[in-house]
Length: 245
Image (tube, rainbow, N blue to C red; front, side):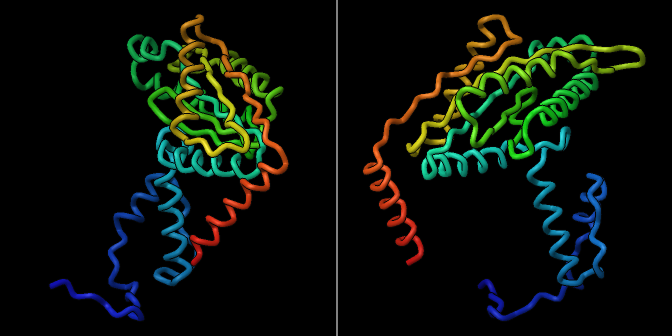
């Protein structure tokens, strides 16, 4: 029978085996805590660093797919509650297989890192950039008005196309990207899956139309009256109250 510890039992930090965890953090270049080893503050800092490491893509340092999906769900909920516009962009490096086949996977990794940096430097600090696949990225842009969505996508596309990526001694490479985007429906509780599928459809359209372009789905304006908004918030508040009971 499994023996359960009393609720007030405290684990002696000295008996914890943390060598592998600390080695993992060191290999990732994470700074180890300055606090006294095995103190509560030190252990908390180690846990925080491990959580951050598990949410990041090892190659680029961007948010990974799991963390992206969690952030997307939060954004869907926020848009349903606030009615503010939000844009999801899906981005894919054009002809990336040819880069690997011609120059090797090391060069492919260089290209992915360069594109990741360029995208992250082009969008706002409040926007979330994630690597969600081999050569595929996603960008969540909260509070993004419909009239600026395409301009943002074009700015990202142009920034990547201007890159000169060194993949070997004196060997420079240029790449392009295709982007597809969709706005979250305002005042409507959609789903992360549907939102992603809509953005993906626009990405496929951009590739089908010749690549190195951005295609955005027109934003659908939700015509919700003030009375309907009040009813919406009333139901959301009721759900919140029931959750806390």
